[in-house]
Length: 251
Image 1 (cartoon, rainbow, N blue to C red):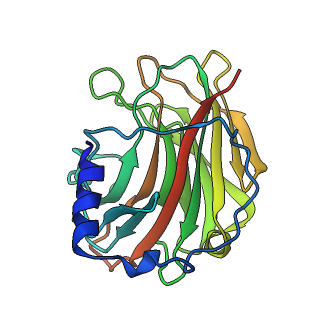
Image 2 (cartoon, one colour):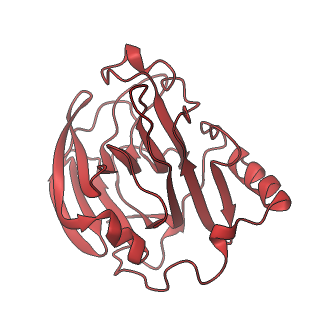
């Protein structure tokens, strides 16, 4: 049993989260591009644990992530962000990661995402990624990061060079779209020599572009909340719910 599933079961035994009372979630779901035969993404057992036990739980197949000001992530790079290219004091993080898949294939990763209306997002809050990090062979940047600004605008960051992303604003998409319904976020990524990525929100193709596939990396999806910490001002508490975290192989 994975760390995340173990901790979620322990928490569920202690407290019933009021956020998950039936009827408080949106009843409507956006259009989808993921195929019906898609498989659930199996989570890594060695993913970085949540910063505290209130930050993550799972109930009724819905994963809930809460990030508060000062919730420093537990990954090795989070506490020493001042030594990275970000120039920030630390990274705040609560995420789950899918198991590694081999480069060279074409994958469609997806999840249905709902942001809690009682909270708000900070600057460059990442809520869905497709990554290629390998601790031993490729300490490389993620292929794709889907983010929110504190304005609520949605952006896609796509890797174009080593640890260098190009930022694309997704027109007509805002945090409030994820409040009103469950929105499918889907990334169709070809890690062969074609090195191409297509991003969908709510069944709509919003971006297609080339992407850097670095040698000796892995392919895996992540979801949750991840953002730059700050000692200059407090960051808002943010909360997101995620379900149907899935993948399929594309011919």
